[in-house]
Image 1 (tube, rainbow, N blue to C red):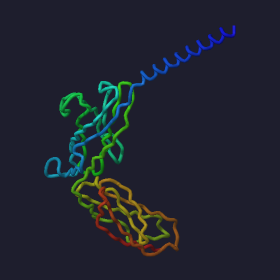
Image 2 (image 1 turned 135 degrees about the vertical axis):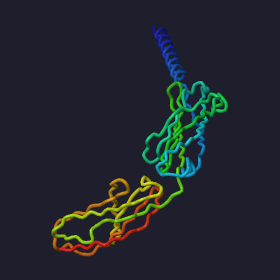
Image 3 (image 1 turned 180 degrees about the horizontal axis):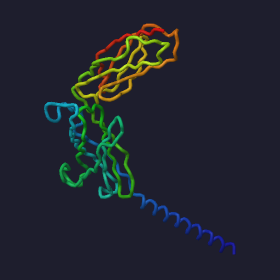
Image 4 (image 1 turned 30 degrees about the vertical axis):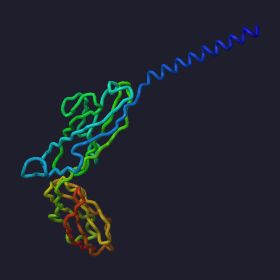
Length: 264
């Protein structure tokens, strides 16, 4: 009887081992492989000067069409037929908003030069205002038929232009205020830029001790700041303020200085 139980135990163990082996094999067969994004090439891949694009004469309000040629090398251990899709998107590097998106192909149809060579190609058509300065991020991924996703490759394309500094045209503020009978004053700065007012990034009021206060963009090149206080006959003196503007290329404008006299 003991010998019979011993043989039964061995037989049960072998059956259990075989069942586990079969389940493991099933899992391995169903996994498939993750596609590998080897390399992404962008053309043009250097700095793009938008002032060299479009019609003449140039205007900062121009809308330009920029064509990016994208090529990605993708491999999959299960063969190229296991690669389901190679999507791309072009993103504004500052706002992270998607400007355009599409899918690369390896079908031998232009811009792809040869089918089934693991090189996926496509065009991205991006619309930009001429005043745009910054970077475009081209993001490419590969998806397998089994639902696996490769790591992304992000390729920046730098957009610049022949820059001109902004110009402070005028500063409007009172010459004198009375700290007892008044409780506020407003300063307004009018700024222009031959590259367009959209190229202006910030306007500052600078105090005598070097403190910078950013003015509020009121639109159409007008920037303002309102100072408030509690009425007081001890609040008096002469204050010298400087005003300066910067564009998106961090080019500084002319500096305009004005004086405020505070009396009781």
